[in-house]
Image 1 (cartoon, rainbow, N blue to C red):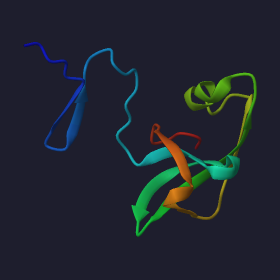
Image 2: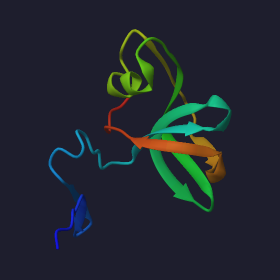
Image 3: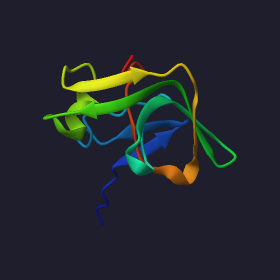
Image 4: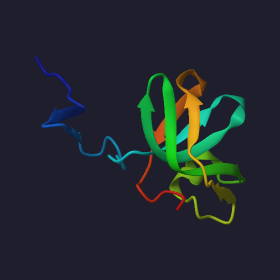
Length: 107
């Protein structure tokens, strides 16, 4: 019997099959897509049904490069980011999806 293993975890560290992912960040920074079109990035924590983003960035827009282009190059002239002074506090059910990103994403 031949089973495919895509990821294993040893002592809390995830290892993925070579070539299965090009980038797998492990820190708390995420891009979060929320309902009503809001997109934020920040250092994510969750508590009591809430999502908190510290060191937050609002993704105001991107053009011509697509969502994946914005993720790969947030400093592109085709991306508009706005640093927020405040912590973002979202109800967990407002999250549509999240993408883990590098610790310095958007900063």
